[in-house]
Image (cartoon, rainbow, N blue to C red; front, side):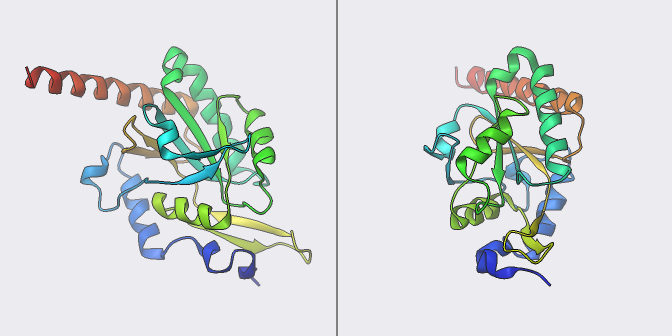
Length: 212
C-alpha cells in the first residue's frame, strides 16, 4: 500500500507522459534544449545548506550538473554522487566552471542541514538543496523528474522514495545540454562536460566573429 498522504498530490511529481518524453530526450547523447520535444530545466526557488534561499539565477554563469534523490537512498544516489565527485577531480581546473546540485525529493526528512552534511561527505563542491514540498514539486516538474513515496514499514517515516535517476548537464545560460544515467562513470562525465564546454567556447567565438 502506498503512502500518498505524505506529499498529497504534490508528491506524485509529474504526469507519466512528460516523464516518458523526458526519458526519450535524455537518451540522446547531446540533445540541445532547442531541438528537444520537452524543455528541461527552468526557474526554481530552493534552500541551500546554510538556510539561504537560492534560485536558478544564483548559479547563472556556471554550468550545472543537476541530480535528484534523497539522503536515505540505499544505493543509486550514493553511486551517482561518488561518480560526480570523481568527475570533479578529473576535470581539474575546469571544475571551477561547474556547480553540481543535488536536490532532494524527500523534503520532510531532508532538511537544509541534513542535505549539507550528506553532500559534504562526497565532495565539498556538491551543493545539496531542499525546499518545501511545493517547491520540490515545482523544480521536479521543470526537470521532468518522477518521484513518489512508497511504504516500507508501519511507522510514519517508514517509506522510501521511488524516483527517476538522471543527471542533467545545463550550460552557463541555464540551457539543457545532455543527460547522464546515474551510474555513468566519473571519467565519462568529465570527458563529456569538458567537450561540451569546449564546443560552447567555439560557438561563442564563431558568433563573435560573425558580428564583426
